[in-house]
Image 1 (cartoon, helix red, strand yellow):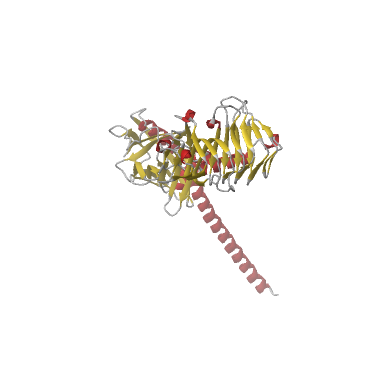
Image 2 (cartoon, helix red, strand yellow):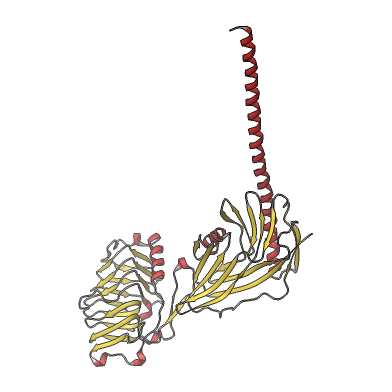
Amino acid sequence: MNSGERAQSEVIGVVLLLGITIAAVTVTVATGGAALGLVTDEARSSSVENGMSQLSSQSSLVALGETDARRFDLGSVDGGQLRLDEDAGRVAVRIERPNETVETYNGSIGTLEYVGEDRTVALQGGGVWAAQNGQGRMISPPEYHYRGSTLTFPVVRLTGDESAPSSGTGVVRRAPGDPDAVDAPDNPLQNGTVVVEVQSDYYEGWYDFFSQRADGDVTKDDANRTTTARLVVPDEVGFERTLTVGQSDGYSHRGNEKKELRESEYMEGVSNPSPDSLIASEVESAADENDNDDASCVTSSGFEDCGTLGAGTYYVDGEATVDGDVDFNTTDGNITVVVDGDMNVGNSELTVLDDSDNGVKYYVNGSLDFQGDGYVGTASEDIEAERNQFYVAEGFLDGSQGDGNPTIEAIVYAPNADVVTKGNPTLRGAFVTRTLETQGNAKVEYDPDLAGKEITITGGAGENPITYLHVSENVVEVDFDR
């Protein structure tokens, strides 16, 4: 290669090197600029989060009447846009019952948003929320308190004159008037399900809050951007009669006339809550923790030659057969028997031995059957029906062949059961079924000690029973500096 060619190659090399360098610098500057922009936006959004959290605390104090007004500072809002929408977000609270729905509250709650390049931060319902990449989350909780069996929900509603304020400072003050309890229900609640529904762009944050910290059976509807929490009102079931059937004309007797109940001894057409979710909750709880290890006679197929069982919870995962008599000693506490399937007592005897006030509760996620001379009761000469309680999901005596002559001194709550007795059973206590047809010499007798006694049917621990509901609307005005 001659010297001219070498000189030309050197020039081309320099040009290529300069081009690569310029390209690299350009990419670096562009990338760095974008990264710097993201970092700046993140810093501003974080600053506004802190400001919004402080405003949430201040607005709650104002809303709940602890002060008339408070100043606030959201920090630097230059990198984004503030907007106040009085109609954004909606809360509905209602009580659903089989034959009616009572609406307690339904209204917009207003939302103050800071919209950054990558993230939105919002004050809504007394809580602070954020949305990024289409996902909402909670930063600080709203004014919603579920304690024991009481729900207190002071709905905080935002109002203001400026929909697009330019300043991040101002005053939050209490709107004229007193907190408005909208269609407040009579407490304690009697039955039904309390439904709290929130429609919001931050519904996922509300969903996480309800699920993790506020309790309830919680669902979300992505299409409608809605989160719903459900709290079950306990139903108190009393036993003023021997027999309560859910179906009109649900009781009939086709045997010995002397054994037929008088009209004053039974009630028909009574709507009783289903025990299904309560039983399912007990099954779940007993499956996780039970005392089977202390009683080797409790097997996967039932109860085999148990002799005496003491206080505790005993669980059978599936159909359970009682083989041999079982004595229950409740001196040290109540006993719970949980069967995730049918329970067949057969010809065995289930007897509470002691004279304490404790008893045995049976949760049967199927049908309850007896045959022959099977017995449930106590060792006392008196009828103590309250000390043996059965909660039955499906049938009662429906799988028994001929029934025989069983004696059941108990409360049997089986509102889904259509019962036809085929032998000569003696039922002493109180019985709740859908229908009951007795034949032959079947006897149904009342335990007068049950007068005034009640049992509580709830949706189970997972559905969070509620007895008291307090909902109010608390309006605050946000006045920004100009």
